[in-house]
Picture 1 (tube, helix red, strand yellow):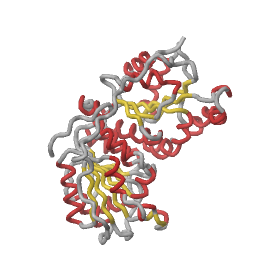
Picture 2 (spheres, one colour; picture 1 turned 180 degrees about the vertical axis):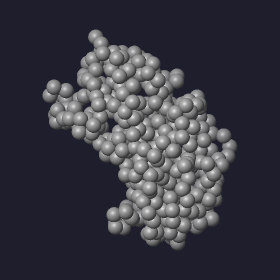
Picture 3 (tube, one colour; picture 1 turned 90 degrees about the horizontal axis):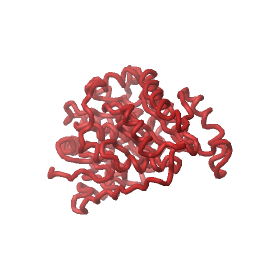
Picture 4 (tube, helix red, strand yellow; picture 1 turned 120 degrees about the horizontal axis):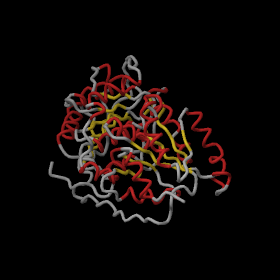
Length: 404
């Protein structure tokens, strides 16, 4: 007896899970094939499992009930994201973790991970169950209740043979390519010579913002922006390096209002897969601003490779709707203003100097940051995502872009 892919998804939908992200595994291939063509549920195939954890956090902030799908090798990849994001802030999510290497029977690369998978979850303090086909529905109901009660991730460690495989084949069509005439439109100066400090550039980027929710990458971007004036629409990252863009993308896929991300070069380089992901999903309400000083400022100004590689050109190649590279305060403000006012996704690279301001740490606890930000978005009773947003999140075909 096995759980069919359709039943797997039906049980999760019955428990009100409505946002799915992850990296596929053959042990649940039928379930993923069902999700890929589902008429109501959002599924995002992410380049890495930790990016899926970030997307799930953003989706939860946006009012969705997220589920992250991963192989147990991806559990290893996600350790820092789970520890310094999901568990530290308290972001509920169901982790469906397939158990490769179960009972020592698998390809060599899965044996060690299979042996330690339960202990990894225990070390993280993530409650988990090992479902059977007969207990699957009860285990999902337990997980749904437990993650909300504890305000943290809960896992199901799924052995081989629980979910049917080989019966459902994906019929998902490839996303429609954006016409070359509109993809990556914007400025591409040959050389960028920074003259502004990041603090000044942040001030310029904040100037056009009204009530737009803004996710701040960890480190001095948070602290310097906070010093310019706190606002409840700001979500400040503490730790979780590299995941600000994924959180903002999860928000953009579940909400209608414009979502802004204040990112850094080191953060983006740690999660470059978000560039093609954002371009492929093409949320119209996503403005991605990267403050690039070509160093890792929080650890002593060691060089980053953005001194050799233009991040705006990577975003252009990935397929953002517009890409702009700027160094002047007025140009930064204009680029953010245009992004907020028009259909995206937009990418703004602000080259800045390595100067850092003396600023205090963020005074709020992670729970306080989570709760005030979600309350500002409308709280736990927020309206569900629109059909257009759900279509984009499934990655089947971006919604047609309208003239800006």
